Length: 442
Ligand code: ADP
Picture 1 (cartoon, rainbow, N blue to C red):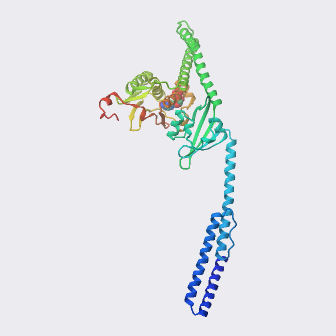
Picture 2: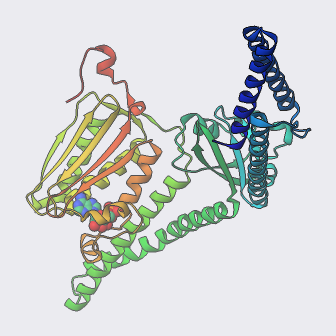
Picture 3: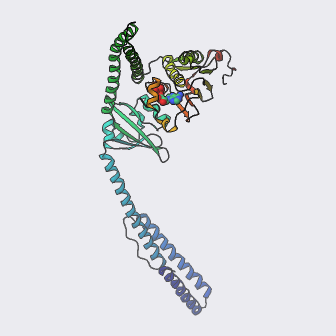
């Protein structure tokens, strides 16, 4: 039992004894005890009233003097208040330090509440986005009005960062990285990536220009090599050398064509060349080309595609992506094996899967397979005449169509490359327009 409570019990016992004694002396014991109890209760109410008054003004006043249990109560509350004040000061200094540190950062930091309104931003964000103090409490999309940013925030998928021109300066390129936390609040990091962006533009221009410039001299060289190779009185060792020169110049031409295709995909702003394309004829044309490529290697081709299925996209780009996958299946499969091309429509997606019975790919290579010039086996690659750019082209084309490439492969068990298109890329085909009840799912 604590001291205050023991003193209070003592006080009650002594007061009751005194009342009893006084009651015995005046002959009204019961009434004296009732009055004594009432006095004690009034005293208690008075202490509660003092506590109430003090709690209301306790920030400015010392605790009232009191003894017994009430002295303990006042002391405990004072201790609690002091501890809370210490913790509050500590927390405030941590927050202040956090704000000072983020204020010193060169990247802009913006805190958004769960409605997307600005709660706080640092000095760099203020500079990069021309924000003002009074913008706090307003939606960030009111200040970054680029449709790409609005769509990005509405979609809520922040796994990738977003690069856009700065709101008030087209020359500045900003990268937005968003992390959500708590109950829908977001932390937006804004970075000036103008230098990197310009370097990237220079790289793309350089590759595109070099590829274009190389194409003409290479065509001339190839022409002469071919003509020389046809000469009837050529010594055998020269003939072999010319054949190799022709082979290598063909490879270089393929490489340059792929580089040009890739840089076009990177630099073109997706134009308005997307239209509804019937998949069956496109895949049939690619299959016919693959039959020619296979030649006497006797691959069997199985094409399954509903006749009336249409996809929204660029014919040239999709032709290039699907043919890269089908030709790879031919190139990397032994003779006399099957290559299947299956199109499947689900409620959410449209899938074009190209499956082969080739040697397969070790899964460790899969994450890097779509990188430019990535080789699983460089000796095999030069034999096959590949450029190492085919899958990079496929990846870019699919990205431009909102689709993705899924690769499944195991050594010795063949490979399946699946192009997965979102539902909004499935066009309403003519047959279904005429008869909506027609089911196109295989
Ligand atoms: P390439 O023009 O050399 O074929 P790609 O970018 O198309 O280059 O392919 C990259 C690498 O992926 C190839 O070198 C090959 O090793 C591997 N690859 C691609 N498709 C297949 C396949 N169907 N089966 C086995 N390996 C494949």
